[in-house]
Amino acid sequence: MSSSLIFVLHAHLPYVRQSSAQSTIEELWFIEAMWETYLPLLDLLQKNSQRHSGPAMAISISPPLAEMMRDPLMNEKFRSHMKALETLAASEVKRTKGTDHETTALLYIEKIKAAIKIYKKCGGDVIAAFSQLFDSGVVEMLATSATHAFLPAYESVPEAVRFQVRAGIEYYERLFGRRPKGFWLPECGYYEGLDLILRDEAIEYFFVEAHGLINGSPLPGFSVHKPVITPSGIAAFGRDTKSCSQVWSAESGYPGAASYRDFYRDIGFDLSADYLSGFFHDFGARVFTGFKYHAVARSLTGKASYNRSQAAEQAYDHAIHFIAERTIDFAELSEYCDAPVIVAAFDAELFGHWWFEGIEWLSGVIEVAAKKRPGFKLNTPSAYLLECGDSLQKSCPSASSWGEGGYNACWISSGSSEFYRHLLEQPVMLKQMLYESYNRRCRITQSAVMQAVREMLLAQSSDWLFLMQKNRARAYAEKRLADHIKNFLSIFDQVMQN
View 1 (cartoon, rainbow, N blue to C red):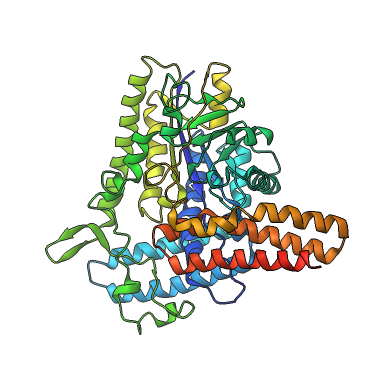
View 2 (cartoon, rainbow, N blue to C red; view 1 turned 90 degrees about the horizontal axis):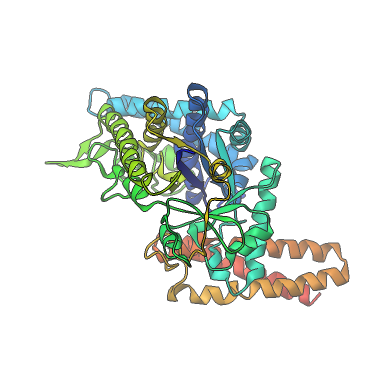
């Protein structure tokens, strides 16, 4: 048995589709992630699977995101936006000609055209393309809950947790034609007993934040470097803090390097509204365009200009550094642990969207690992468990999450209490509606109850409370949450009054 490095990328966005022909600012979140993260990631995996033995990793795509990827209207909005980006890119090449930014403007044309080419290559069906990679063994696709609910918030209402888990698994089966083995807990949110619900749905393993495993009972002998078998009989992997912080931390991690592109400095806010009027037409406000010409580093006059060749070289150096660091880690671990594992788990949107060079870095890691054969392999969770056999220690993970503080504070706080009063009542009220629907056997009532289910699930999305807690798009998040609650209550009243 050899040491294993397991990358886990969790892809998720809240369900922001609107029925209007024009795109909204929130739908831009999806469009940006498509061309900056999901399509380049798909291309990376396809290319590297041909060059090497196959970059093994685990990926989860949440049902709200997958549904938007498959939606005809969202795909039309994506294609329309990419055309607008091509037009803007042509203007930018002319505007920046002879300046420090000309090379970067040409880079954006290449990036946009590449994304369109990848999209066309898979016929616009990104999910089908990931499914093919799954079939070939390049990736292992994980299931997650129906609408990315923060499950510890519903510990007192286990039927709500079961509903979220089961609906997410059923959706996964429709996408990939098989039962999932692994499950991604939204926000790594775990409470004692949650593994029993996962076991009842035939899940074989899940992931927790590092302290969820480290503080388990009994204390695991190998920290996060071996999964444990929980009281339910399924495995729990722990996220490795050291390797993850090297990648995601803006202060001490790779993305903060001086030569990398700055995320926030964008021509959508730098240039005149007249110049950008065509691009802003749909949104009615200034938005990020994706055209950014400055590096993280500062010069005497402000932000330094972005130098693509320097940034690409830095990304590869960081890939070499990451592999070297893991080689040292595994050498130390192997002295007392047979076949140790390091789980590097991230939000997929970090790569390409938040960290522009992240896709190149990930490609470099795969390439360096293939060339240098560092004494460990990239692996999938299922393959690792198969190799381990019955050698894993038994332990019950402790309540935990990722995010600030590590104990639910981003999703359960005094500021969210007024909403949880309704969210925790909804599963009980749904039971009453289901009883009424069963007794009446009325098609209209059954249709109304199904819509109530959708409103309940969408209200349970962890995104709204997170955005409110972090004061990002707060007004939108509050409105979405309040609207779903109001819709549910309205349907409940109508059903109960017949």
